[in-house]
Length: 333
Image (cartoon, rainbow, N blue to C red; front, side, top):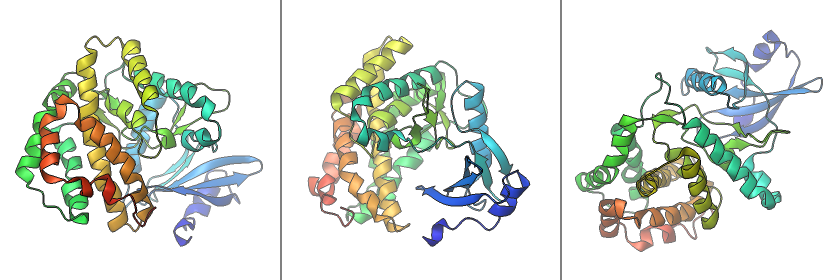
């Protein structure tokens, strides 16, 4: 694919950092403008990140990476940096992403999810770094705006914005109050495709964390357990919720569960908008095949009493035919 041709500056960047003549092979792209390549030289390998400066700011990646390393977690270590060109050479974690790995080794699911949950619990033991933004009302509102901005037009529904945003603010008020009291670092895309199984390590490698914010300790947990890209068995979800609450000594489990469902609804509504935008704006229709799963999560979230106002809004404005059923036979299928 033409989009996976290495950036013109890559050979000089690699040569300047001890990788002259290295072979550069396409590795992956993602839902952003970032692209990844694997470089090979004399039996060694590393990962080249291409983050065009006009679209991406690698300083955020490096800042969060530093925080994670300082706290004993396992992001890929930067090996070389060119901020002007938007190039990073990173430690190579290999190919064992949790999502694809579990397709071939399903018996490891519980073991891996326990490790992922334990990592989150350890992360939640410390306050968020002072130099990252907050997952506050403004940020959460900006994200649920993706639903009226992208999803609603795609299925031909009208959104009366005052009622829509008012319902959300009523439902997440207690979540925001908790973030203001005691925020932790949330990576925001903590799910199976961004976690790596590393040889000889129980701890998982971490990817795609550059958008981290100071937020609620339930956010990354719901990102992990309500994964847009794979089905997490409900029994496993319940067990991992209990494990997390027990590990952290959460006393008011009912309140934590309410926050978990509110954040799940917020996140899943955002994802419905993002996947529609990836289709409409970015020409990536394969994301539409994931919409029914996301709707399944959202329907479960909306059943919780803490989401009464949001549930009422969806019941009044989004008929069943405009929900999961709208995508069941989509062109992405």
